[in-house]
Image 1 (cartoon, rainbow, N blue to C red):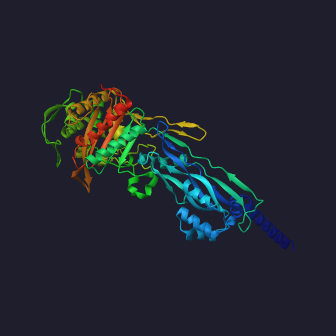
Image 2: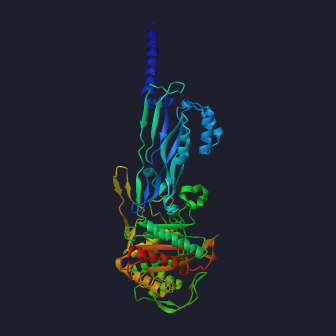
Image 3: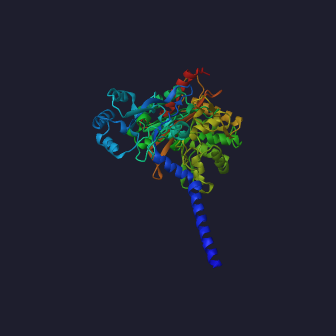
Length: 558
């Protein structure tokens, strides 16, 4: 009998322990989940969207701002004439009346959102009818006062999977968290049938607007770059092109232009490939513009000196490959200056041999090729740099004159910026400060990645680049009276494993004024049909932009 009582007691005790565990699970461990379910059952919510932060040029003028718009919603319990309400909303909002009617039949919500981003004019027309049950909440929509200018830099605002505003590409995508802000809401207590309890709680939480971005982009410089690039593309019958202009001392981007482009305010009308920013995401073989980087490395290592002579007496054979000069002309013994002036592929192969393969790879890595620059723009891409085991003698030779190696325009202009500023590789950036609605400011500082060249080497290389402009193919088209350090490039485009002799990327890279460069700029022209050569397509665009910049910055002739 005693054992039976003990078993009964133990059974009852276990039963109560299970009840306590179950109560603990519901009332303690799972309380937040249950509270959320209960709140959803007893309340209805209406989101109040936050205003998205604006994007401003370096002088504070807007590139992206917000235009007043409205969220249109219905309060079904207040509607007196359903058919008339549906008819008017369908007409003024351009929505199918059947879809509005279906929403009204299916919902028991206190607030029923009908349309977003509705202009003030349409709202004013609806309000004139004075119909009960129609409500409006002010929100905002993106407005671009400069139209499609800087589209690739800015990105656009679309809808995510939840139907909410979200930034994509460029600055809108990269700084989504800063720009988006925090939405507010209206919360109304309801009964079991979903009807509002008049004496219940009505809670309103105001939204927290997004932060503004102040850019390094100079609106005037951006306008000049876009205008001159488009003129060049049309004049030379090109497929597209880019212009990247950077402050070599800080790494800040002053302008970035690309064509073809799109309108961020109406982006759905354009093919999705237009959203890609070629300056940061498209790769190309830089051709002869790359020679200045390899020459600078050889000077920096002391492998060649200003008085070094190179014997350009004919083609160079490497295995089964033969390397010629671009115009099949040979000049015998030439100086380093003349290698750049003549844009001699043979001369650069001989310079590379002096530098050596290991040092060439070292400088390619130190200049940041093969990896992202980490610029603050969504969508950056980088072609990979082959591992050392996959480099052969012909690869080193062809890289010395910019073939067989791929870069992005941003990587290229940054690398040449290291020559312009005396040897430092800078981290590129577009946003110089972030400002919230209380005028608190977060400033973005410039950052030196590493020192690549000695000052002495960059000084020598700058003189060579000036000589290449003054004595090379571009001497007759440069702005007279100004010293510009630059280099042309013409690279065939690799298609299906071979080079297409008729399709080229023409380019010109340079900086000015040479005594203290204000800007470093790269122009690329994709597949020009008027002429394949950088000296006849990209260089004129570069000089036309530079001429405008000299005037804008008040730079006097040297």
